[in-house]
Image 1 (cartoon, one colour):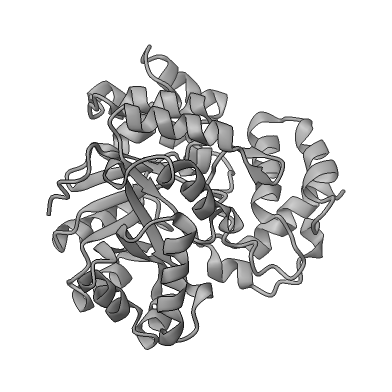
Image 2: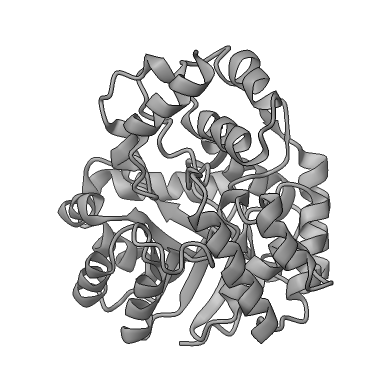
Length: 370
């Protein structure tokens, strides 16, 4: 399947937008959008939960109210917490259209599908409702985003062959990771002839802020940023029609555009360097958190889990004393400490990376609450 309206294979993920305090920085966001569109790109991705609902309204204020409809493609998603019955889906969908300032979505995805929430979507006939909306012209293309095993993905694609595209987590570190199984999920998509949208190509920034031992392998190539190799790895696979990048400032946007404007797959030397970086990570005790923040929504103790994991990673990888300051003075000032965890498990059921969060929080507490 070819989506002729998609201009290039690089998309603007609106999950990690520039912030000023607790507000999205509209001035910076406008600059990023303008640079993106003037460079010939047109694909934007959001969801209602991104930035606690602010991502959609920022898109309305900075994109859809400033550009004609044929200048951009907009993807939104149906997310489990926002509907309990089939009757609630249409009103929620209509509210998303209004929040984004559009009359239709170019792509609409069943969000973060896994074995458990897929059953909820089926009970509420969410897929059938989305397909009805497509017939009505309110959705141009219907798909899913996915976080689970290849077996579950194969089941969904078998039961709903109407799915037009699949968004999966795909990067060089997760490619052969037994927890994420990016390669196997990609191969299921190819088996079902489904175009692939890549999310987390830089693994929430983990493939940009590399430890020194890993960084040297990419630096030796004498060209390109750390992010550029991650983007080019993901975009170099057959069947991948879109790679999303959650850029947070204009500098990141410019770097990504430089990489993807005249895209070239990794050559043999670059693939070997990436493999060496993976080898470094495999020897390190790093928490593979992408800071998607799905875990924090239901935490009864208001623990900022991704931020606490980032503190531990920073201290483990870079031996940075600032990690203690950020833990004590920033990330636990208005929220819970790692030791406050009551082990309810809500975080683990929401984690796309399948991390043993309760156990890892004990490691965080042992390091920072001595």
